[in-house]
Length: 341
Figure 1 (spheres, rainbow, N blue to C red):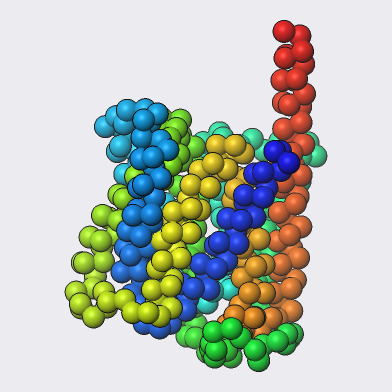
Figure 2 (cartoon, rainbow, N blue to C red):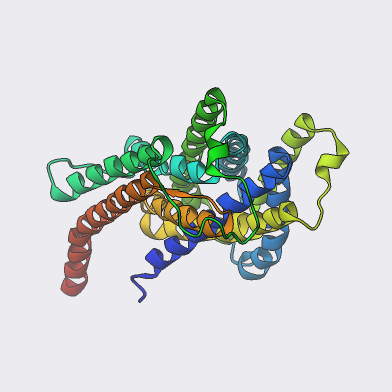
Protein backbone atom coordinates (compact mmCIF):
# COMPACT_ATOMS: atom_id res chain seq x y z
CA UNK A 1 0.00 0.00 0.00
CA UNK A 2 2.86 2.34 0.82
CA UNK A 3 4.28 1.99 -2.69
CA UNK A 4 0.90 2.85 -4.22
CA UNK A 5 0.45 6.01 -2.15
CA UNK A 6 1.87 8.43 -4.80
CA UNK A 7 -0.53 6.96 -7.38
CA UNK A 8 -3.52 7.43 -5.09
CA UNK A 9 -2.43 10.99 -4.30
CA UNK A 10 -2.15 12.01 -7.97
CA UNK A 11 -5.64 10.60 -8.64
CA UNK A 12 -6.98 12.74 -5.77
CA UNK A 13 -5.14 15.78 -7.14
CA UNK A 14 -6.69 15.36 -10.59
CA UNK A 15 -10.17 14.90 -9.12
CA UNK A 16 -9.78 18.22 -7.29
CA UNK A 17 -8.62 19.90 -10.50
CA UNK A 18 -11.59 18.49 -12.44
CA UNK A 19 -13.97 20.17 -10.00
CA UNK A 20 -11.91 23.37 -10.33
CA UNK A 21 -12.45 23.47 -14.12
CA UNK A 22 -16.21 23.23 -13.68
CA UNK A 23 -16.58 25.70 -10.80
CA UNK A 24 -14.20 28.27 -12.29
CA UNK A 25 -16.03 28.27 -15.62
CA UNK A 26 -19.38 28.60 -13.86
CA UNK A 27 -18.09 31.56 -11.80
CA UNK A 28 -16.69 33.38 -14.85
CA UNK A 29 -19.91 32.80 -16.77
CA UNK A 30 -21.74 34.45 -13.88
CA UNK A 31 -19.70 37.61 -14.36
CA UNK A 32 -16.78 37.27 -11.95
CA UNK A 33 -13.55 39.03 -12.89
CA UNK A 34 -10.81 36.42 -13.28
CA UNK A 35 -8.06 38.63 -11.77
CA UNK A 36 -10.15 39.24 -8.64
CA UNK A 37 -10.96 35.54 -8.56
CA UNK A 38 -7.24 34.63 -8.45
CA UNK A 39 -6.62 37.08 -5.58
CA UNK A 40 -9.53 35.75 -3.52
CA UNK A 41 -8.55 32.11 -4.00
CA UNK A 42 -4.93 32.85 -3.03
CA UNK A 43 -5.84 34.79 0.09
CA UNK A 44 -8.32 32.04 1.08
CA UNK A 45 -5.58 29.44 0.64
CA UNK A 46 -3.13 31.51 2.70
CA UNK A 47 -5.57 31.90 5.60
CA UNK A 48 -6.35 28.20 5.47
CA UNK A 49 -2.70 27.06 5.42
CA UNK A 50 -1.09 29.43 7.96
CA UNK A 51 -2.30 27.60 11.14
CA UNK A 52 -1.18 24.21 9.80
CA UNK A 53 2.19 25.54 8.66
CA UNK A 54 2.96 27.13 12.04
CA UNK A 55 1.74 24.13 14.02
CA UNK A 56 3.49 21.36 12.06
CA UNK A 57 6.66 22.91 10.61
CA UNK A 58 7.51 26.21 12.25
CA UNK A 59 9.85 24.72 14.88
CA UNK A 60 11.61 22.34 12.48
CA UNK A 61 11.82 24.64 9.45
CA UNK A 62 15.30 25.65 8.25
CA UNK A 63 16.20 29.36 8.15
CA UNK A 64 14.97 31.16 5.05
CA UNK A 65 17.83 32.91 3.29
CA UNK A 66 17.36 35.96 1.08
CA UNK A 67 18.36 33.99 -2.02
CA UNK A 68 15.83 31.26 -1.21
CA UNK A 69 13.14 33.91 -0.62
CA UNK A 70 13.84 35.49 -4.02
CA UNK A 71 13.59 32.07 -5.67
CA UNK A 72 10.26 31.40 -3.97
CA UNK A 73 8.97 34.87 -4.93
CA UNK A 74 9.85 34.27 -8.58
CA UNK A 75 8.41 30.76 -8.46
CA UNK A 76 5.16 32.09 -6.98
CA UNK A 77 4.80 34.73 -9.66
CA UNK A 78 5.64 32.42 -12.55
CA UNK A 79 3.80 29.24 -11.62
CA UNK A 80 0.88 30.59 -9.60
CA UNK A 81 0.08 34.26 -10.22
CA UNK A 82 0.92 34.51 -13.93
CA UNK A 83 -0.26 31.00 -14.72
CA UNK A 84 -3.63 31.44 -12.98
CA UNK A 85 -4.27 34.93 -14.38
CA UNK A 86 -3.58 33.78 -17.93
CA UNK A 87 -5.60 30.60 -17.36
CA UNK A 88 -8.58 32.68 -16.19
CA UNK A 89 -8.53 34.82 -19.32
CA UNK A 90 -8.30 31.70 -21.49
CA UNK A 91 -11.20 30.04 -19.67
CA UNK A 92 -13.43 33.05 -20.39
CA UNK A 93 -12.76 32.56 -24.13
CA UNK A 94 -13.18 28.77 -24.11
CA UNK A 95 -14.89 26.03 -22.08
CA UNK A 96 -14.17 23.81 -19.07
CA UNK A 97 -13.64 20.74 -21.26
CA UNK A 98 -11.25 22.52 -23.62
CA UNK A 99 -9.37 24.00 -20.66
CA UNK A 100 -8.83 20.50 -19.32
CA UNK A 101 -7.83 19.30 -22.80
CA UNK A 102 -5.21 21.98 -23.42
CA UNK A 103 -3.84 21.43 -19.93
CA UNK A 104 -2.88 17.95 -21.11
CA UNK A 105 -0.06 19.51 -23.10
CA UNK A 106 1.53 19.92 -19.67
CA UNK A 107 3.19 16.47 -19.68
CA UNK A 108 5.00 17.19 -22.95
CA UNK A 109 6.00 20.68 -21.82
CA UNK A 110 7.21 19.47 -18.43
CA UNK A 111 9.09 16.55 -19.95
CA UNK A 112 10.84 18.89 -22.42
CA UNK A 113 11.79 21.36 -19.67
CA UNK A 114 12.99 18.51 -17.43
CA UNK A 115 15.16 17.24 -20.29
CA UNK A 116 16.72 20.68 -20.73
CA UNK A 117 17.52 20.84 -17.01
CA UNK A 118 18.74 17.22 -17.01
CA UNK A 119 16.18 16.09 -14.46
CA UNK A 120 14.81 13.53 -16.91
CA UNK A 121 16.69 11.32 -19.37
CA UNK A 122 15.24 10.01 -22.64
CA UNK A 123 16.98 6.90 -23.99
CA UNK A 124 15.21 6.30 -27.30
CA UNK A 125 17.12 3.05 -27.89
CA UNK A 126 15.58 1.40 -24.84
CA UNK A 127 12.04 0.08 -24.33
CA UNK A 128 11.27 2.46 -21.40
CA UNK A 129 12.50 5.44 -23.44
CA UNK A 130 10.35 4.48 -26.40
CA UNK A 131 7.36 3.97 -24.10
CA UNK A 132 7.79 7.44 -22.60
CA UNK A 133 8.08 9.01 -26.05
CA UNK A 134 5.00 7.14 -27.32
CA UNK A 135 3.15 8.20 -24.17
CA UNK A 136 3.91 11.89 -24.72
CA UNK A 137 2.83 11.67 -28.38
CA UNK A 138 -0.39 9.86 -27.37
CA UNK A 139 -1.12 12.56 -24.76
CA UNK A 140 -0.68 15.32 -27.34
CA UNK A 141 -2.79 13.41 -29.87
CA UNK A 142 -5.58 12.87 -27.38
CA UNK A 143 -5.57 16.52 -26.33
CA UNK A 144 -5.67 17.61 -30.00
CA UNK A 145 -8.63 15.32 -30.73
CA UNK A 146 -10.56 16.67 -27.75
CA UNK A 147 -9.78 20.27 -28.65
CA UNK A 148 -10.39 20.24 -32.41
CA UNK A 149 -12.66 17.28 -33.21
CA UNK A 150 -16.17 16.92 -31.83
CA UNK A 151 -17.87 14.36 -34.05
CA UNK A 152 -21.35 12.96 -33.41
CA UNK A 153 -23.04 13.81 -30.13
CA UNK A 154 -23.52 10.95 -27.67
CA UNK A 155 -26.37 12.20 -25.49
CA UNK A 156 -26.03 10.74 -22.00
CA UNK A 157 -28.34 12.22 -19.37
CA UNK A 158 -27.63 15.62 -20.90
CA UNK A 159 -31.17 16.79 -20.08
CA UNK A 160 -30.49 16.33 -16.35
CA UNK A 161 -27.90 18.48 -14.67
CA UNK A 162 -27.22 19.22 -11.04
CA UNK A 163 -26.87 23.00 -11.28
CA UNK A 164 -29.61 23.64 -13.84
CA UNK A 165 -26.89 25.00 -16.08
CA UNK A 166 -28.22 25.53 -19.61
CA UNK A 167 -25.19 26.57 -21.59
CA UNK A 168 -25.06 24.04 -24.41
CA UNK A 169 -22.39 22.74 -26.71
CA UNK A 170 -24.18 24.50 -29.55
CA UNK A 171 -23.55 27.81 -27.82
CA UNK A 172 -19.89 26.95 -27.39
CA UNK A 173 -19.69 26.16 -31.08
CA UNK A 174 -20.71 29.73 -31.94
CA UNK A 175 -17.84 31.31 -30.05
CA UNK A 176 -15.87 33.56 -32.40
CA UNK A 177 -13.05 31.67 -34.09
CA UNK A 178 -10.48 34.35 -33.22
CA UNK A 179 -11.48 34.28 -29.53
CA UNK A 180 -11.34 30.48 -29.48
CA UNK A 181 -7.83 30.43 -30.98
CA UNK A 182 -6.72 33.17 -28.59
CA UNK A 183 -8.07 31.15 -25.68
CA UNK A 184 -6.21 28.03 -26.84
CA UNK A 185 -2.94 29.98 -27.13
CA UNK A 186 -3.34 31.54 -23.68
CA UNK A 187 -4.18 28.16 -22.17
CA UNK A 188 -1.01 26.73 -23.72
CA UNK A 189 1.01 29.65 -22.32
CA UNK A 190 -0.51 29.08 -18.87
CA UNK A 191 0.43 25.39 -19.05
CA UNK A 192 3.99 26.37 -20.01
CA UNK A 193 4.32 28.53 -16.90
CA UNK A 194 2.79 25.73 -14.86
CA UNK A 195 5.29 23.23 -16.26
CA UNK A 196 8.17 25.55 -15.41
CA UNK A 197 6.77 25.83 -11.88
CA UNK A 198 6.70 22.03 -11.52
CA UNK A 199 10.29 21.66 -12.74
CA UNK A 200 11.83 24.61 -10.88
CA UNK A 201 10.11 23.59 -7.64
CA UNK A 202 12.40 20.55 -7.58
CA UNK A 203 15.39 22.87 -7.00
CA UNK A 204 13.57 25.13 -4.53
CA UNK A 205 12.50 22.19 -2.36
CA UNK A 206 16.17 21.24 -2.00
CA UNK A 207 16.93 24.72 -0.62
CA UNK A 208 13.81 24.85 1.56
CA UNK A 209 12.48 21.31 2.26
CA UNK A 210 9.60 22.36 4.56
CA UNK A 211 6.84 21.64 2.02
CA UNK A 212 3.92 23.03 4.02
CA UNK A 213 5.68 26.30 4.84
CA UNK A 214 6.88 26.53 1.25
CA UNK A 215 3.33 26.14 -0.03
CA UNK A 216 2.00 28.71 2.45
CA UNK A 217 4.71 31.20 1.57
CA UNK A 218 4.02 30.79 -2.15
CA UNK A 219 0.30 31.37 -1.59
CA UNK A 220 1.00 34.48 0.53
CA UNK A 221 3.39 35.98 -2.02
CA UNK A 222 0.97 35.15 -4.83
CA UNK A 223 -1.81 36.92 -2.89
CA UNK A 224 0.23 40.13 -2.83
CA UNK A 225 1.16 39.80 -6.49
CA UNK A 226 -2.38 39.01 -7.66
CA UNK A 227 -3.81 41.86 -5.54
CA UNK A 228 -1.56 44.35 -7.30
CA UNK A 229 -2.59 43.04 -10.71
CA UNK A 230 -6.30 42.97 -9.82
CA UNK A 231 -6.25 46.56 -8.50
CA UNK A 232 -4.51 47.74 -11.65
CA UNK A 233 -7.05 46.02 -13.90
CA UNK A 234 -10.35 46.37 -12.03
CA UNK A 235 -11.35 49.48 -10.00
CA UNK A 236 -15.12 48.85 -9.85
CA UNK A 237 -15.99 48.08 -6.22
CA UNK A 238 -19.02 46.03 -7.28
CA UNK A 239 -16.76 43.48 -8.95
CA UNK A 240 -15.05 42.81 -5.62
CA UNK A 241 -18.26 41.86 -3.79
CA UNK A 242 -19.07 38.20 -3.14
CA UNK A 243 -22.57 36.81 -2.53
CA UNK A 244 -23.94 33.43 -1.54
CA UNK A 245 -23.64 31.99 -5.02
CA UNK A 246 -21.39 29.95 -7.29
CA UNK A 247 -18.77 32.73 -7.27
CA UNK A 248 -18.22 32.37 -3.51
CA UNK A 249 -18.29 28.59 -3.79
CA UNK A 250 -15.64 28.66 -6.53
CA UNK A 251 -13.40 31.00 -4.53
CA UNK A 252 -13.60 28.94 -1.31
CA UNK A 253 -13.14 25.62 -3.11
CA UNK A 254 -10.25 26.79 -5.30
CA UNK A 255 -8.61 28.60 -2.42
CA UNK A 256 -8.75 25.77 0.12
CA UNK A 257 -8.86 22.57 -1.93
CA UNK A 258 -6.89 23.56 -5.05
CA UNK A 259 -4.40 26.21 -3.99
CA UNK A 260 -4.11 25.01 -0.40
CA UNK A 261 -4.44 21.23 -0.22
CA UNK A 262 -3.44 20.34 -3.78
CA UNK A 263 -0.31 22.47 -3.93
CA UNK A 264 0.97 20.75 -0.80
CA UNK A 265 0.12 17.33 -2.24
CA UNK A 266 1.91 18.27 -5.47
CA UNK A 267 5.03 19.25 -3.56
CA UNK A 268 4.92 15.87 -1.80
CA UNK A 269 4.54 13.94 -5.09
CA UNK A 270 7.34 15.95 -6.74
CA UNK A 271 9.68 15.07 -3.88
CA UNK A 272 8.77 11.36 -4.07
CA UNK A 273 8.44 10.77 -7.82
CA UNK A 274 9.58 13.91 -9.65
CA UNK A 275 7.74 16.59 -11.68
CA UNK A 276 7.12 14.55 -14.83
CA UNK A 277 5.35 11.78 -12.87
CA UNK A 278 2.95 14.40 -11.52
CA UNK A 279 2.41 16.06 -14.89
CA UNK A 280 1.72 12.76 -16.63
CA UNK A 281 -1.35 12.22 -14.45
CA UNK A 282 -3.11 15.33 -15.80
CA UNK A 283 -5.16 13.37 -18.42
CA UNK A 284 -7.17 11.96 -15.53
CA UNK A 285 -8.63 15.39 -14.73
CA UNK A 286 -9.76 15.76 -18.35
CA UNK A 287 -11.60 12.45 -18.32
CA UNK A 288 -13.24 13.38 -15.01
CA UNK A 289 -14.18 16.81 -16.38
CA UNK A 290 -15.81 15.39 -19.50
CA UNK A 291 -18.11 13.05 -17.61
CA UNK A 292 -18.73 15.37 -14.66
CA UNK A 293 -19.77 18.20 -17.00
CA UNK A 294 -22.44 15.89 -18.41
CA UNK A 295 -24.11 15.35 -15.06
CA UNK A 296 -23.42 18.77 -13.49
CA UNK A 297 -23.53 21.23 -16.41
CA UNK A 298 -25.65 19.18 -18.80
CA UNK A 299 -23.05 19.24 -21.59
CA UNK A 300 -23.13 16.66 -24.36
CA UNK A 301 -20.39 14.04 -24.72
CA UNK A 302 -19.07 13.73 -28.27
CA UNK A 303 -17.27 10.97 -30.11
CA UNK A 304 -14.15 13.14 -30.07
CA UNK A 305 -14.28 13.24 -26.27
CA UNK A 306 -14.33 9.45 -26.07
CA UNK A 307 -11.53 8.96 -28.62
CA UNK A 308 -9.39 11.65 -27.04
CA UNK A 309 -9.88 10.18 -23.58
CA UNK A 310 -8.80 6.74 -24.79
CA UNK A 311 -5.63 8.20 -26.36
CA UNK A 312 -4.82 10.07 -23.13
CA UNK A 313 -5.23 6.96 -20.99
CA UNK A 314 -2.93 5.01 -23.33
CA UNK A 315 -0.35 7.80 -23.17
CA UNK A 316 -0.57 8.03 -19.41
CA UNK A 317 0.11 4.36 -18.81
CA UNK A 318 2.85 4.19 -21.46
CA UNK A 319 4.80 6.88 -19.65
CA UNK A 320 4.16 5.43 -16.19
CA UNK A 321 5.29 2.01 -17.44
CA UNK A 322 8.45 3.53 -18.92
CA UNK A 323 9.27 5.37 -15.68
CA UNK A 324 8.65 2.28 -13.56
CA UNK A 325 10.92 0.16 -15.78
CA UNK A 326 13.68 2.79 -15.56
CA UNK A 327 13.46 2.83 -11.78
CA UNK A 328 13.71 -0.96 -11.44
CA UNK A 329 17.49 -1.21 -12.08
CA UNK A 330 18.09 1.61 -9.61
CA UNK A 331 15.99 -0.14 -6.96
CA UNK A 332 17.81 -3.42 -7.61
CA UNK A 333 21.25 -1.80 -7.30
CA UNK A 334 20.24 -0.07 -4.08
CA UNK A 335 19.07 -3.42 -2.69
CA UNK A 336 22.34 -5.08 -3.64
CA UNK A 337 24.37 -2.32 -1.97
CA UNK A 338 22.29 -2.62 1.20
CA UNK A 339 22.69 -6.41 1.34
CA UNK A 340 26.48 -6.19 0.77
CA UNK A 341 26.88 -3.81 3.67
